[in-house]
Amino acid sequence: MDPVVVDFAWLIGSFVFGVGLGCLTGLIPGFHVNNVALIALSLSPVAVGIGIPLDAVAGIIVACGTVHTFLNYIPSALVGAPDDNMALALLPGHRMLISGQAAQGVAYSARGSQMGMLMSIPLLIVARLMFGENPGLGLYESSRDFLPWLLLIISIFLILTETTRLPWPYWMQRATSRLVFPLPRAINIDIPLGKFRFKRKWENLNLSLGASSRVAGILVASAFFLLTGFYGWAVFELPGRSPVGMPSATLLFPGLAGLFGIANLIDIYVTTSEIPPQKQNWEMPAMKPLAVPTFLSAVVSSVMAILPGMTAAQATVVVMSARNMWGRLTDPNYIPADFEHGIQPGFNPRPVSIESSDMEGLSEEEKEIFGAALEEAGETSPDLDLSAQSQQQDLEVIAVLSSVNTAVTVMVLGFLYMVGRPRSGAALALNMMYPIDGWNAVEPPADFVRLLGITIAAGLFAVPVMIEVGKGMLKMHEIVPLRTLVISVAGFVSVLVWLSTGWVGVGVLIVGTGLGLMPPRIGIRRSHAMGIILVPIMLYTFAQTFDSFGFI
Image 1 (tube, rainbow, N blue to C red):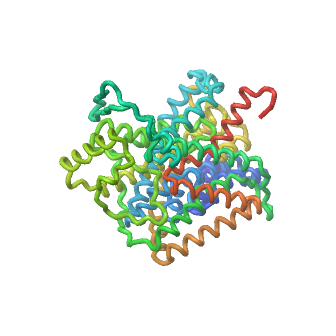
Image 2: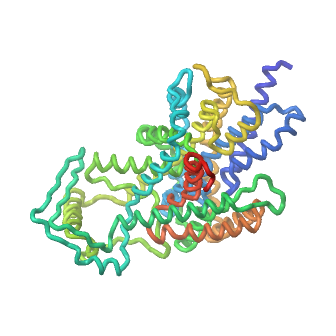
Image 3: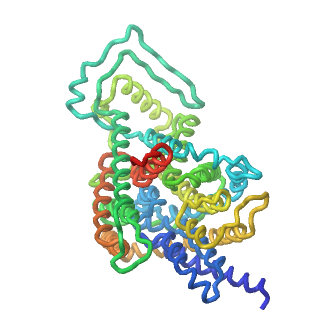
């Protein structure tokens, strides 16, 4: 038989098999594409022995990873069991579910992943010229010494974007209540920034610690980030072994499952008893309104994909923080998107009027600014539909996160060939399976072009699959009560943790669940829990750079 026909047959076969595996990994909580990649790596000698070429096995891994990034929104938003990359989709996705708009959320997720994949492809050329060599600027090699500092700067930025205001301890409020000193002259600041005006007025030097402080929120977020970081350090150091001999057991899975999965399932069980009827709006959104946020997502993904420990969750926080900042500068009536603060357990939202007593915790300057803003909003937009604006923002968050998730996968594959560094379990399996023909010339290697073609085909094929699977999942919600489904998923994840990591993993899961219940009750963002990965990596990279004696 013609070798070209044989190669094409293996290509199609690996594509179909990889798409099927990607559907399974995307829909089954805890069954990550990294598990498939490492299993494929361990079975690659057997595959070669029976005549399956290694490039076909590589095609299976790539197709599986691509489809996974499309479909993993569904268990995150419609079931409540996210993986680490889609953890932030859980809150806006759940809000769409309980408002009867889950179908629209699935459509936006599919469009976001599709646009993220397509927009990241031309960025591969830009990344090659920036990070590669001959030709290229070689920024990756020159920036390796600054890598731990870069991770630290990004982590600090993510913490400083925390907007929650929390009260200081009561004894500190009392001790500092008299630290208010009148200024000899009032200070007025009025700076126009685009359509936004930065207005501040100070008549007193107020050093008191009040009941509504953003600094307190940032300090609590920092403490939680460090707490999950040291929890992650312990997780990486603990031994984990499957009691049934499953391969590649890792305790990071129960850690993430507890922080983002089981904890949220408990909150869903407490706050939601049933799912309202869903509107069957499966129409794909237009590309034009999502072009700017998804392109920005692809750009941020190209940077995040080369940094160890940075996932789609961190990239999404960066993109949405920039989006909120730009919205404030261009629209004076812009309401920042709430992309991580969910409904508090036991809280039933209802419209309430704002009384003067509601502003008791604010300073005089804050009361004046807040009151003026409310008065202006009432005069200019008396019929402003905040619910519709919030829902549209949720849809944009879903599209952005899905875009980042898929774009990171494409860029990780590209960086494997550009700089020879794997940044995911799938890329690590490819790197260990056979020698990577690096992208060291102007034209990319044939193997990379083939895998990129599989990526594009799998992504285009995944869109209609995702819509059909979403329809099936909503039909399941109509048959199975929500709380029964939540208990079933939590039990399934717990059993999977025991099968893959044993009783040590179950203990890690319990501790992670306790930590994961904290953010919504405190009011801070859930993404700070990604310190479980970032802090150990920063400790490791700083130790490599500065700890030549091995103290750390």
